[in-house]
Amino acid sequence: MLARFRRARAGPAQTRTPICVGENLYLRWGFRELLERGAVDVIEPDVPKCGVLAEAKKIANLAEMHYAPFAPHLVSTPLGTMATAHQCGAIPNFLGQGWHALEEREVWDSYVHAPDGSGSIVKDGYITLADTPGIGVELDMDGVRAHAVPGYGIFG
Image 1 (tube, rainbow, N blue to C red):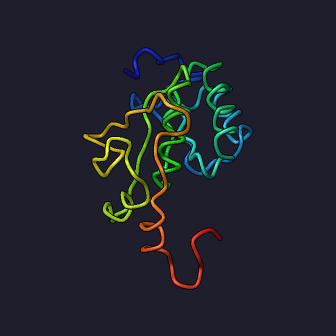
Image 2: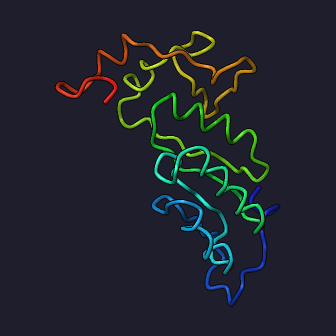
């Protein structure tokens, strides 16, 4: 799949291995020079860290102008994961979405009600996007409260 995005780098290639960058870059300006120099094959912004959904879309647009695919890194809740998945569904240069449910998958899954009632929004490595209003999941407040960190509350 990466082959359809492949482009010549600006300068001598030092490796045949595709270079994926961005987990610790911020805002579109953090990606601009890498893309302009052709120093990266795939951009991987961390959506919550790069400026959230609006800025991630701007970064994807910038990457598209440089023929680079967008493959966001994501360490988030099921709400953030589903919101990012919906956004990726509208990005022409989307390649794949990283996903990390930490080591406690049952806890992660307990935060929302999956639309099909199965218990998880991720099935066999895929997320199915809802075609109804909203992001396709409902917050399960019992699950959120059950795993809240003592002394921090559940919403800041």
